[in-house]
Length: 101
Image (tube, rainbow, N blue to C red; front, side, top):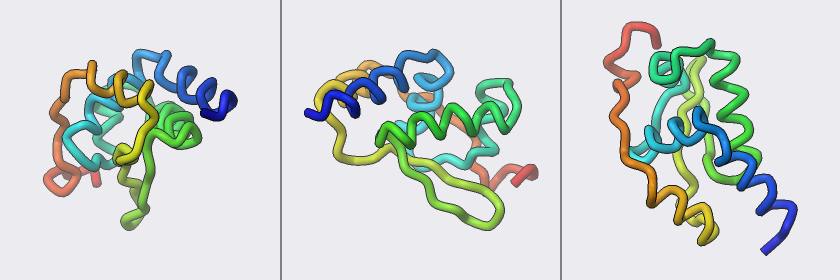
C-alpha cells in the first residue's frame, strides 16, 4: 500500500466529526445540507471535513443542482474497511424531504 495514501486516510479518520460523517454515510448517499444539522457546525466547516475524506479516497461526491451528495467509495483498504465496520450507522434526514435543499 502507498504509505502517503495510508497516512492521508489515517489522518482523515482521526477526527470525531469525520467519523460522524462516515457513520451517516453508511446508510447511503447524503446531501451536504443534511450534515450541517448532524454536526451543528457551519456548512463551510462541514465541507472542509468532507474534502479531507474525499482527498483520502474514502468518499466521493456528485453535484445535484446547487448541492453535493456524498457516499462512501465501495473499494476500501482493509484498514479503512475495519474503521467503517466499527462505526454504527447513523440516520440522517433525506435531502429530498428537507426544505433547506
